[in-house]
Length: 281
Image (cartoon, rainbow, N blue to C red; front, top):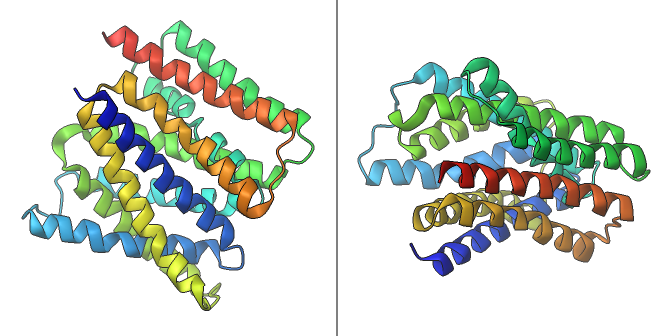
């Protein structure tokens, strides 16, 4: 186990995702459907290339689950991109991270997995953070909040579907299905909402897939290099990077209540990761 290398990989991953987040924010004049389309299309270059190079069958074994994971994930991604147009980018990212709460609920009903009492305490801390944002932060947009909460619910369902798929599919096969269906979905929805990009917007749109792909690669390398309890909490640094970029590039304002809400959300999720890892040991 190389902890320093794992931390370095995860920091690269969080920075890649943070860059993708602020590019989505920057493309405010481009339809969210188009952003889904270009983000997914540009990733296919990497996923198809990997599968072909390594002679991995593109068509998986669990086609129904793969399709359901892809549709659910693509819809979650669309709602997230839409929410960024109404919320500060740091707030949107932090709210997306409450997905494990919904994943635990879905897993309890669908997979009969047990959630331990202390995990509910940590989930409650994060949920209080959401209530602080909604009830005390007057700057937060209600419509944007509803969008990101729907994205988080669907993201939680994605976690459960992936857990159900297990190790029966290669991870890149799962991602490739996701990108194919998201490309088709985004393309079809863009037909009546197309806004022709101009100048640098083309570069920004295609860079979404590049940042997304390398974010996934470095995250995977981090989890392969060190244990989950070391690596997983560092993923939440994405919120810090994204918030700093939002303030720097878009002059976003974070009130005391928004920072408190974000801290509670991330704090609860980090404690949950730490506890799960400790319990497994």
